Length: 426
Ligand code: ASP
Image 1 (cartoon, rainbow, N blue to C red):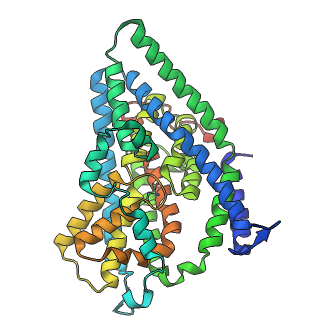
Image 2: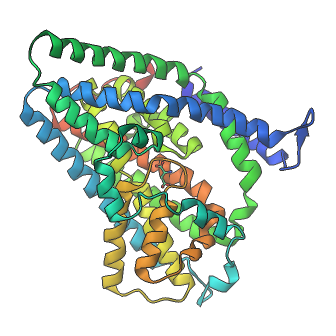
Image 3: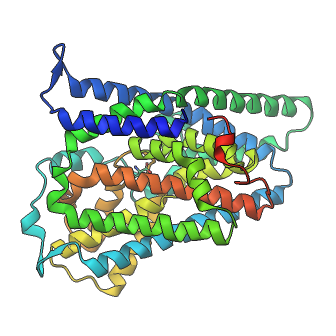
């Protein structure tokens, strides 16, 4: 059976299991939720284990194979232009939906009192405090980490990418046998990592089962009730961005079928959804884009790791919508200038947000501060955060895939999406 069908079935079964499990349920004296958590965590561990060697070897080998120095500038320029443009479109869609449907106003009244703050707000604030990545200076400093290993340990991929880019750039200039030997070795490392990735990917249905069952047990669908309107507004905006805006780009600019791309990316999108981490979905995304969508190794290994770290359309859109929602719930009128400021900050912070679950909460507290709202107000949206995190992460990953296809096509690649993904090997 195809991998994405296996994942679908496992998600459905997991939702069923989750619906019948409570936090108190036990099996042989062990809490069932702990069993789900362990299965899910093992899978995430497996994916995260490969992220650092995979992206460093992919970026370095893509750079050393890039050809002319000019190619690097062109590919980098195109990627950054794409990331910024689509994130901006996402944010503007979010702002338009939030202003049109005003989810923070219920029956003409600001919804603040009615919603109340979640009990664990203080705990969440303490957890995200000092995680960095949210403020501008933090983002800039992350670009050049003093300690590479520390950056890797903390999952700050931005610094690792900059290092890999520099390393690859200078490795190109090392002549003779020693340069070639190292280039070959890194290429070998990259190919090994791809094989290891394929091995871990086989366990996706099992891992996804644990993750979804745990989420359904913890959150349940009833939790969404008071925030239903806000929840639906975010879903609508995410849908407009992914199914209309990005899809049009694939159709018009890349002249390829967006549906075929979605089918090719299905395993990666489902993994992004289940893990709520674009870093965890990166290995699968690289595999899907390379082998199922037919994008060259050169483009895949440059565009996707970079996109995974700095291109977060869903996150940027969400940051904006949460802040507008909270401002509405508090009855705060936001001027055009203030909304512009929010858009700008969301665009910049989405670059620095880590590709892990709930990472955008850090950026949201920062923007709340700029608007003059208390950071505690984030408590309003905590209940739905996980479910929306799953959705926005899938959009983040979808946008990375669209970037790879668009850039590959603009580089003259003809093979992209020419065959059905099923002809490939996953
Ligand atoms: N979970 C998101 C991601 O990994 C980041 C976020 O919006 O919290 O892409």
